[in-house]
Image 1 (cartoon, one colour):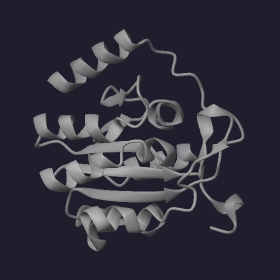
Image 2 (image 1 turned 90 degrees about the horizontal axis):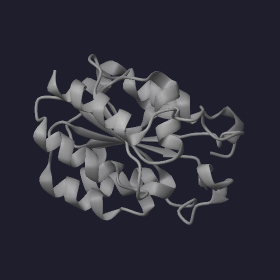
Image 3 (image 1 turned 45 degrees about the vertical axis):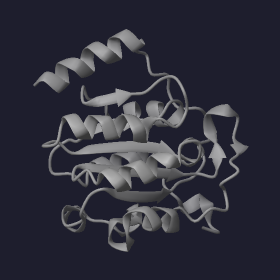
Amino acid sequence: MSELSNLPSQKDAIAAALALYPARPFAVSDIGSQTGWLKAAGHDARNLYVSGPMGLATSVALGLAAVRPNEQVLAIAGDGALAMNLTSLATIAGAKPKNLSILLVDNRVYEFTASVPTPTRELDWLAVGRAFFGADQCMRLSDLTPERWAGVARPAMIVADIAAAPAKPPALGMTPAQIRLEFLKAAKS
């Protein structure tokens, strides 16, 4: 990680993670930059842009995975956000949903709040994921191909080391009511 300039952007990491799936998964993003970059990487009615308390993408995604057991679900969490809800990893590990994965995007800063360093910037997220889900179920995005990802048991965690963005993500341009309506329509199909 010494050469941060060679790291992908958050938008590119999200797009790469979504491309690992043969069919578009439901994607649940954390408030702030993950929401903006998920939409920029590819808006889809199956995206659930979480607003409200920071760090809830993993918890919301677990609920979605429980009610949609035949659909793949990807929670997109920032390093700062997931640090605020680490207990969700224990809950997910205990529940063992066969359709839930987490994309942890690690840029070592609170990107949405003027790039304040996260207290977890020295944390080894790969080791954290492996502690909860096992070595075969937690890997770096840079090591994955769609073929390899297809063989990974769930729950699983993908760690993406990313570059801090030079600017805030694009505005979402949707109200919570619009997000809800669009997502409910997609969930019913």
